[in-house]
Image (tube, rainbow, N blue to C red; front, top):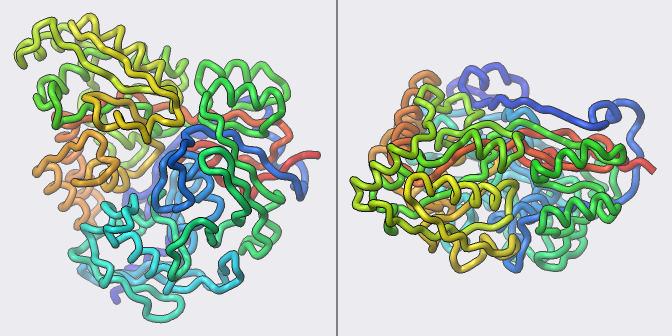
Length: 522
């Protein structure tokens, strides 16, 4: 092995130079900013967490996430090799160090020793191998399959000893530590096939669940961080309606709620018993156009729809000002984000002209499938329908309850749909939202030139050159893609002032659903 060790915790500076760290502003409102360091954490108590995006298809399988509730549960039970801290900087979690050969196509991963599973058996390299091989088996339908399958086969992953994993890649790949930190890259115990009683290495152990309604976890007494977690347990409660979630917090039926709508934030700030947790992020509430369906087969129509929306108004109204405008690209916090591309502006006249060129002259009617499943989703859909009239477009909103939105029969079947994404790196979102055949490639968009630029970026170890390649890939998305990304929303959560130690994260709600450092005041 060449001396190319990437110790992510000890050598943060090298990762910053390599463009792996993400930048984000963390803001805390209300009374949350001071109590964490004021006193020793109190041990005990069960944290009640109100969450949306839960439904009948909820799963305990960490590789198949149907919404934020599934993900939040997995975050407490399982770990990954690498992860992202509250500011979006990558670090080692269960990995200890990465090495690669001179070509960059053979990697060795040294894992942490002394980690145990919830059943007290030791965590070893065999568990890592099994987890990656599980993801790489197409029959398992893991969300991360499209991230890893272009890079390796299941047979390319092996354990050299109890603490060392070797991966032989199909081609040089510079971003392996980054992709292994993607939210869908959890580690499970060797041989796991049944997830009805999940066993992980995380701070909390599974206790019981009622599918799509409630999940109860208890403290992992053998957790590797001495003294943590402080809580006796966590109870995740599905409350899909955002106003109902807020009401549950005010009524002391839950202790924290995630995915707060901006129009409810003022209520939190005015209540001395509550605190608003806010972080600037690359999270989006967006819309996508199915490129294999009319009218969106024509790129001129896709371009017109991006021009007919007023992004400033959408951020101001749909997000109540808690966000910033977007430019039809994900990952604004990634160092390789294509910020040099011109900001697309509101131009309904040009939109109308493009639609006329495409054969739609004041007679275009489009169904938009939407819900209140994410902050600003229904509000933005309603506002876009109003804005579209200036370009001669009529929207028919098909609105369904939040719990059935992503699992409903119209998702990805209707010409235009709403969606939402948490913060990702460019590499992660390219593997999930833009990869050929990926389920979360919501518009079913493909482009050969895009694939070529991404392949070049992934095999380039020079950060400046990689940034140039990613720019070209994003330029193609900006001109041709199927997403309408009008803004980036601040992550807003509301918590009782009894809750201590909650740290906001740019990655996702409620501190990226990390609760090992959280405690409850008596």
